[in-house]
Image 1 (cartoon, rainbow, N blue to C red):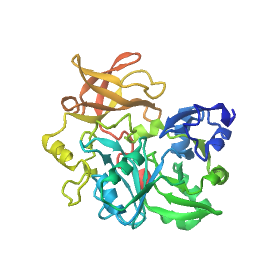
Image 2 (cartoon, helix red, strand yellow):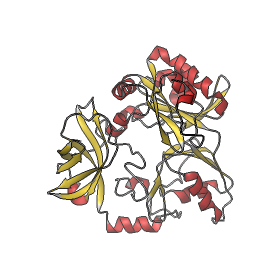
Image 3 (tube, helix red, strand yellow):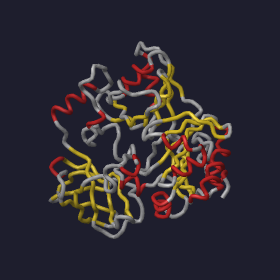
Image 4 (tube, one colour):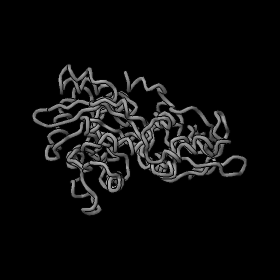
Length: 379
């Protein structure tokens, strides 16, 4: 297929890697942050095995950056998130939540600190550029908030370290988990971080010149061939195995951090004020009415991820919904993330999930479903 065969009009943006992904076999796209993201390079199960056995290269240019600079940048960024950033060093990355005044989650991005007063918020799927600019208007803080010319690629999988070593030399091997480095690849300006949406060893390469997207993609693929690198897409199977959130599915503006068990990302004791602090204190003190759980669903292997929220019942009463479900070929089971009432959230609880094929039994289990201590990604 040709790149022009895909399209909804000019309002959906193409990443600097769009043409390259089509050349390398992308067959279908989804829309994320008003941009195309490749979702199909053939069999999703093969994409999963490519990821967990070797490595895949994914176009995640849809992870738009919100750049915050200016004398008050650090203070402003802290206002956006309940996570304590007081010890965040230059060169460090952190997984954060951005909350509104009611404690609802607006986004769950990676925050990168490039300099003392220079931050990038690497977004999940929602318009945080608009939120941040709006918050800034009456904040009285001296900040500049823009969307820079930055487009990330994800290089993920157990061979990703060897490919990075071949690209950048031995010194890249001491880049620690959730840290970043400014590098240059044959004149292509990059920020490289040891992060990713796969729960595997992985790196993100943030291109700082969109005109060089094609060159960067081809350079990485050429180097990676010897290590079994394949073009790919973010794996629903692997991210659900790893218990990683997909915004709009597993969390949204009506979800709070305590329902997701993400208490560690909220510091109500710090002096700094942040949006949602009073609401989150109240939620913590009163307790939540529902919680995210892992489920094993006992039915024939699911053909793909769910495309609607499936009702969950207990003794004939609705107690929640399945937010993300998929068949894991490695575990040989149908696994799911779900939001259920606290009464139904205990390990071992027997529930009924209403799948498109009909009602089926499900059991509440620990999540993540695989490598719970993240040893693969951290090693």
